[in-house]
Amino acid sequence: METNGVDVLSRLAEAGRRPCGVERTLKVLDGKWATLIIRELLTGPKRFGELRSAMGDPSAKTLTDRLRALENQQILTRTVYAEVPPRVVYELTEQGRSLSGILYAMLVWGEEHPIREESQR
Image (cartoon, rainbow, N blue to C red):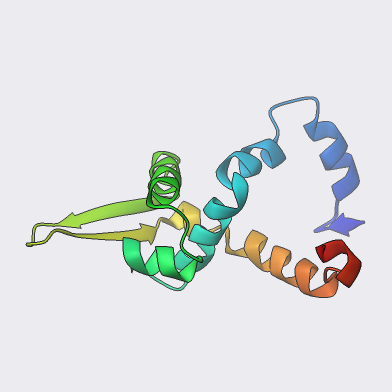
């Protein structure tokens, strides 16, 4: 398997012997909520309530914790507008938008390998 003339399997094997890009990616995409937040923000900035309802209503605490973690990792920005009531908008950074290829690959893989009926129980 080659990508741009680089042996992917060799790179993956070598990654286990030094700081690894796969580990870094997994730290960012930690759990389903982080991945779904990024998926939703790929279409543009969103407010907290918009994100929450688009993701199937995770708890407010869970969503807040994941948003803070992604902000600390410089994946998204949080902008507070001085209005009454205050308006808070979340938006992906350039680094966050660069994850679109990974999420697209996940989409393609998931569509090509659907869950079988007996696996859903």
